[in-house]
Image (cartoon, rainbow, N blue to C red):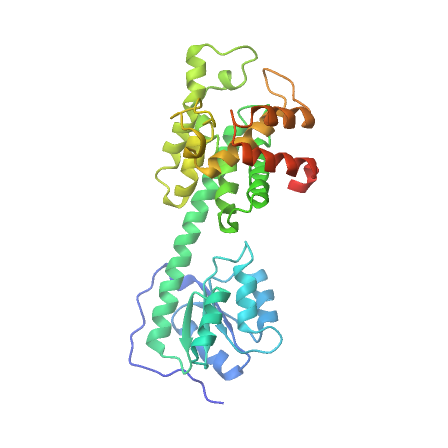
Length: 338
């Protein structure tokens, strides 16, 4: 069978960071797959091969490619099925997928879009188009990787801050898990779970400016100490402000100490003026704080903490969300969140 690449007189693009990228070619036709691999290696990429979706998943798991060129029609696991698996998996959802097809129907294209494909190439493949698509999607992938690394650095910083307070070990992670569980139980958009997960981890990052002596103080705080605690939501927002990838999380960090009755801080927002995910993290944060031993008091039991949430629903916290959280706690064990 002939190789379907149509050569054009194109010069190889300049070497940049994408030239070290790994591209996986998935096609059951040996000649087509070999032609694509030859082109990619000539362009300076490291190339990987798979003959079907099952093999491709194994290669992706082991080799972590930066881009997948994926044939639509294949035996065992076809391109649409593999694309759906990749986009529904937290570990691979940001992996760019270019769907390659000889089928030109609008219906098939819509199916590929629904499956999560990032781009399309029609057979026979135009070399200039292939070069441009690969370069563009790899640039996007590298930018996403940089943002992801930045997020991880910030999350590590948040955990380091948590370690300053010997009484709050694991607090950020637990708040994150409780908050995500509440998002699910409330029927809020699944796509926003990552925002809430990260917001739970980062909600107290502003405490970087609070002295250890204040965080671990056994007795009542004086006015200056109390004001340093009150400042941590704004400090947290300032820390996250330069990171555009965390823009959806900043409001949660800033407003998670607002109260339903308008007597919270830093702005005294009331009721539904408070962003919904800040209300969710506030409940998760308060519950975990109540059920954890702190320098100034012993932990409440699970039942006591649930009772406190119910007593102050409509005053401290969103009453509807408290009802959902209490129902969730009553029918769940702590291991449900892990």
